[in-house]
Length: 113
Image (cartoon, rainbow, N blue to C red; front, side):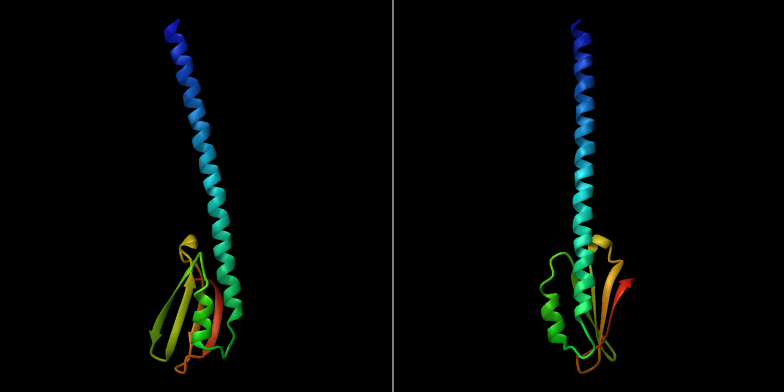
């Protein structure tokens, strides 16, 4: 009888642990989805703020307010380029901002890389 009770208890505990793990995974997926969407909005809306003629200092001032993404500045032969993206999207969504040699925005485009 004792052995049967132990097997029944182990089965219950195993089932409960399975539900805990599945529930935790589901909650983690929802949290990841929320932050991923917020990072997407951060990139998209900031990219919409940059117009032709904006200065590099204005762009970097705005980009320094980001929380869920990052940016990098590359020196090109004919100016600079800023790439704003997020690891939450594996850097597949990005905002590319190109500058002329006078550090003025030439173009800003949002999309998949």
